[in-house]
Structure formats: C-alpha cells, structure tokens
Image (cartoon, rainbow, N blue to C red; front, side):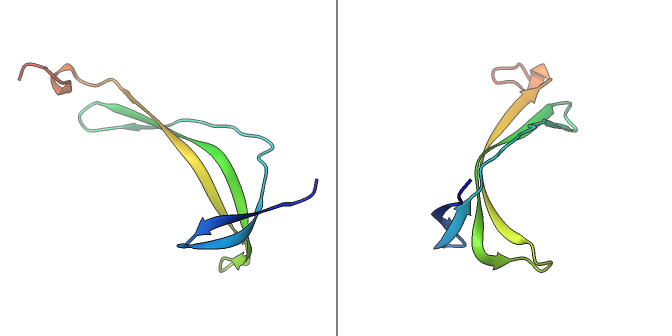
Amino acid sequence: MAERKTRILHKGSMVDAVDVPISESHEKWSEFLLEDGTTVRLRATLVSIARVDSEYDGQGNPTYVVSMTPSVAILNVAENLKQGAKK
C-alpha cells in the first residue's frame, strides 16, 4: 500500500507526516480504585496515527503523533458523594 502523506500540527507547527493506518486494535480498560471507594475506568480509542517525517527520538525511533478519544467510566460511587446526598 502506498504511503499517504499528510500535514499535521506538531509542537506548534505544521509538519509533513505519513498517515499510518491501524491494522488491529485491542482496547482494554485501565482501572483505578480511589481512596473514597470510587472505581475509575479509563480507555483510549485511537482515531489516527501519523509518523513525522525526519524526526526521531534519542534511540533513533521515529516520532509518532497520536489522535485519540478517551473513554471514562465512574463506578461504585458511595451514596454520600452523589449530588443531593444527605450529609
């Protein structure tokens, strides 16, 4: 498949990049138990990924810019923390 060139905003400037299609995704939840007993679940859904032309990290790996949508679920909230709860 031919590379699809694009221009993206990166570090405050428009730069040349290559759109990298996502061929497979395994989106799993990360779960956090807060001290007040609430459980917070987080998941990132990738929208797009682009590889920046001619930019590399300290190990020589190409730089990727990721566009994602976060999903948040709040579970097990104590009744006294909910709006309208009697104190």
